[in-house]
Length: 159
Image 1 (cartoon, rainbow, N blue to C red):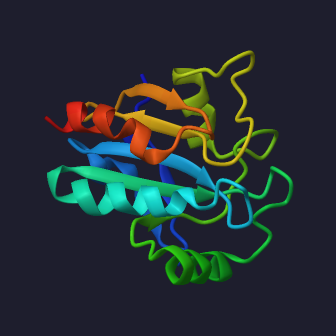
Image 2 (tube, one colour):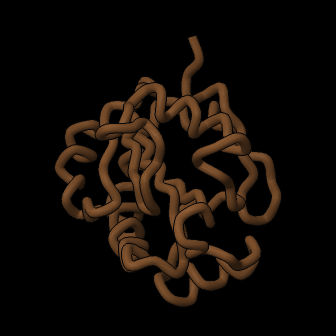
Image 3 (cartoon, rainbow, N blue to C red):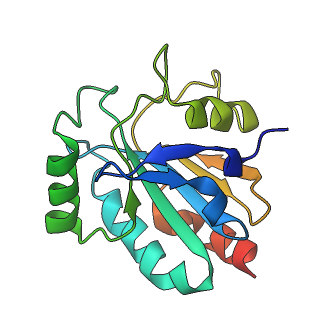
């Protein structure tokens, strides 16, 4: 059986990140965009990261330009935007597709583990997947769900 720990992806600097390093951590994986109505959620994601990183939370952002072309910049531009505007210090990956023929294999797996409402496809930016310390997807949250609203779920998984 495939687990989250079987995947790799590149960070914004092009370094390969092996997800096996996240064993025994709680992960929050989010497809992000820099020019979206939900972009201010970067602030809430950073707050979660700062509040719980020492207890084992890892927030991982995956920029995606598939929804309204709301993340058209280069990986370098995305990183600079996130840092300058929201102080993002959590792990940001290279831009990927989360749906379609070129979707990242991690997202194929995530969607199989926790399907969506009406369709399993990602419907918009800032869809969130919460993964427990055993590497299992335990919930999927809509783009409209603010990071603060899932804090209690994260706390339960960290306990």
